[in-house]
Image 1: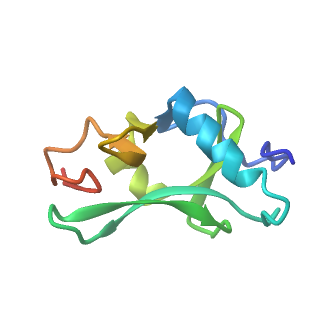
Image 2: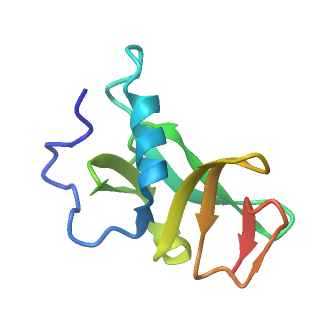
Length: 122
């Protein structure tokens, strides 16, 4: 399966987020499943909530009219245009350690984060 979009509106110049090698490996493992929907891509965003005010969104979804599409390290990513100011410069990692397992968000725009690292304020 190819994650590279042929859509002419895909932005490859300035990706607002970066993925570590571990995150790329895990995302590629998830999207390589035989039953992965071809009309979906990785959504990176934010939503209100969490103990620090905003929560990260990371999942697979269809493109909406408010989205910008990026190809980041060969991965097709949808991001709502209004979320980019909260996420620009963020790095997403995936860890499989004894103390933590999952995606980790390192956001330079966050002025406060919760203990679990899944919510922030800016």
